[in-house]
Length: 245
Image 1 (cartoon, rainbow, N blue to C red):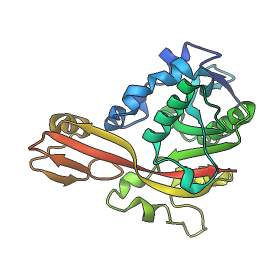
Image 2 (image 1 turned 90 degrees about the horizontal axis):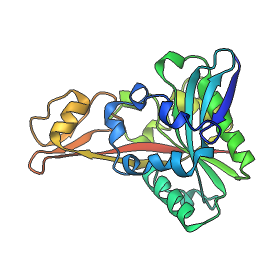
Image 3 (image 1 turned 45 degrees about the vertical axis):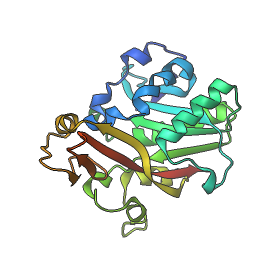
């Protein structure tokens, strides 16, 4: 199978006719405090950095990639705390007329029908090409480990150190990055913030939360903290920086 990349700048209809988010992400992931507010600006203000991966033979949209240009000083201590901070800083820099030097991969979206075709690697290669075409020196990614939800009470610091018997990363998505030359950077225990009422969290997860406390939930990478008195559930999604050469 051969594929071709088109950006939203190339095909503006991709912004409205792309892959539905609910096919890719758990329901709770669609309600980030920062991402819900700022994500639409990626299509409006940075269309050349949002793209679709199309099947050359059929013209089918197979997957989508979302990135933002940002500034990074090249040091690990200079990396942000994750998705929320990176997205806010990138758009603030854009509004101020700043000059970015780094491309940050924000999301790689592959619906179930397209999985198992090697598209994860193709998406990362497309991101690398966009960085090069845009004269950006670095490619970094606050990665959502793909099987961390099976180990929600394991700290992200420990999870990212796990290796298989062959020495490769335990996590499949991290393995794809490492196969393309990326190295593991700092972990991000507070990368993406999601809050909602208790009723909203019960609807998003399909669980009941009878009392205040911490709960693991389906597809959650960490527990959600429920406060019934305040009628709020609060969750921090943990990620890890993958830094590409």
